[in-house]
Image (cartoon, rainbow, N blue to C red; front, top):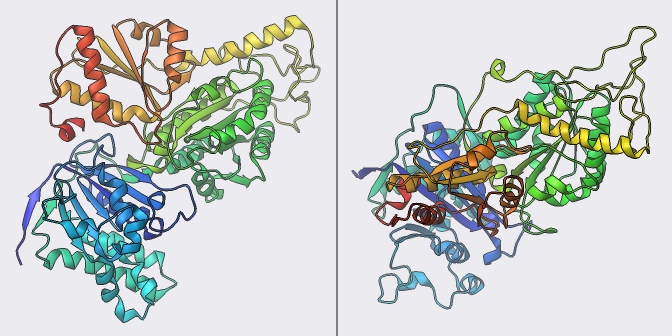
Length: 637
């Protein structure tokens, strides 16, 4: 039968189901298909912290949202256009996020009395479709027996009903692949490799995937399919990449470009563990990974590796940073290169292990005893984690200091297309080890480079470069243990001056102020880049002026930040915390920074942020600001 094909410029799709329904795999495969097709995209995986939350309950719902378009997009989208709900809990947990008119594809199989009760439904909402009191009346609902059709499609492979039903996520993927014209060959190839050792499971998943596609092609329930053309992109080779994978690649590249072997001392913790998993695969690049017995052992080993002449790295999340704080102070005192990766998550304590937050900035700045300054670098997108990692390596090696790299759960698990760089285009990093001395010369382990204030890096085993190491205060030049008050004051100020000196090597900030008439500046850091950019676009599309600056370097601040802040009447600082960058900006520049703060474990919504920006523009310019005529989704991107 001939079906209508409708052109779209973008769509936001959310797959949602029980933790065991394979929604992360389904979303990831749909994303990979879209990346192969050439769409721009941003993803948002969202899953429970429990290994296996109670089946069929709201806490057990796992979802994966992907925003794909024929143009540049910055966020995974505020509200899904399409929801695929595999059970009642998935429907109920996500319904409030849907705009009117959204499409809902729901698996009717699991809408049993027991599952409805678990999800908190008194009656089956599917039984009320079309009635006067239809709770789903504002949406385009497609009840489909995904599970039943999957079991029928894979019957020939002799699987138990339970095993057969597990392929329903592939049936759903096949249906959505038909609806949005996704290429199917990459997923078939993926399934052939993933289940190569279990032929029946492999063939059943492929059969379910194809059955879903054929169902879309033949059923009268879906009369329209959609086409979203590839997005224009700069020439190059692209791949879809998550933040954790990009960060791991950046650490490998940092080792290659510095000529240093990389040593990772790490203890597994959500959401940073993927970096350990990935780096363990790259022994061929001189990477050594050590899964330590605890957080303290991990960083202790990394500091030891740096002392021995390797690039020491440790990865963790907020609770692990708290445990590592004394050892970070040791790295400050010994003035050795060290990259400390903090993939931030909701806190305090165990908090929200699988949700995102930006609340470790002040811990990174001040979370150590004594005056222990540490440079801080933050990536702005999943792909940017690669460049931020290289920058962290550059600072650590060049200035002989531990560096904090603040990613977060949203960046770590989210993904976007990433242009693979040419190796020769990456910066060269010179470790500049101390050279053996001529006969009669004396080694001075705390003499300093006049430009960077870095001390010599002298690995053990080089005759004549023997020196003391450890956490006790060192005497200037000689490195001997010193309790002299004047020396301690001098060394504290010198270590701070060394971190401050990093600002000399930073490029000027990019100020996005196309009209030059803006009186409001939106200042951000880290993963708020996407929501800020989308919110700013909406305000500008409505005809108003607003500027944007995004910080990669949070300690030290770039040299020109103070001058930039003075140009604007109002400064808005959106953060996924209660105002940590706002506090630093206020204290450093005496600017009345206004916070836009959210700590609900989810990324900031661009539409809400746009309203806040519009309110500030109205105050600053004494005008009425109305964003209601600006189409929300189109203008956000």
